[in-house]
Image (cartoon, rainbow, N blue to C red; front, side, top):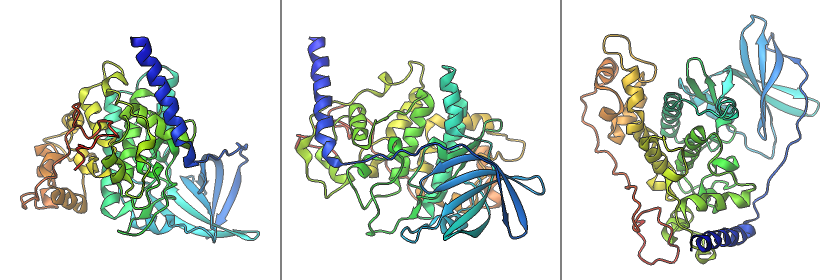
Length: 414
């Protein structure tokens, strides 16, 4: 009987892959090139570019040393007249301890092409490199490190989203870190956009493994919830040591998601893209329990937070500041609370961040009480807060938001 069930599951997966092939999602391969050092001269300053730290479709990032022996990062971006580059505009707006620092910018012409150069604060590593090193050693990153990195990522997103900005490319490679201090900074705003209600956006955005399902369904009117999905993928990857949804192609990505979350219901698909109509093309595949995907010693709290991030219905995903109130971070709060000393950098929120937390109704759940008191000199912590949002419950029952029943007429995604 078990063998028949396994055979049926494999056949359904094949049917699912076949059903999605008409989405025509392509992939692009970039050949690797060796690096040769060079010097950039601008505004009377020389930058000796001694290494390449990143390369993508929107530009190349170099490690550079100034004449004063200061290490910086230089991002060089081709100014394509056919493409609207918003990165400089957005980076001038974004100023936060968990986002990459914009120090300066300048343009240079090379032959007939113009390049924007962003002079950025330098960080020694990115989260992909560090996570990969743990995986190569067959070790798991310490949970305290995962807590620290995801806390800072959620804090960065809480701030960025409050400005109306959607990053649209959250992935470990875009999370700069210092593994000695556990500091994290979100970088690469080349795909970022200020989302405007009722204004269309491109659906083919975000790196494949971290792409929210509404994007795969072709949604043009999405929200900052796509960043939350990506964050859930990053969190899962830090525990597993490998991407949780590792589609071999864009087409296969939705297959990998459905194999874990199950087939989305009609209402879930409608919530992701109201214009999508081919509801009956997917075979019915049941959800795979979270606890069976991860090591047996994985804390239940991290699985619960992950489940609240990786939900089909965008509006049901947890918000960044709500995530910071989750029990998963209780250990971090206990460790970094310092009743008699100065406030920890983890809790040193700006007035604007505190106001966002109050408006969301989570201010008093965000910090250890002794740390919240230290913020009273910059913010009236006794100001009445708005009621907190009611989160959609996570359940294993047949009425769960995540229950895969594409044929059902009694769905629960109200």
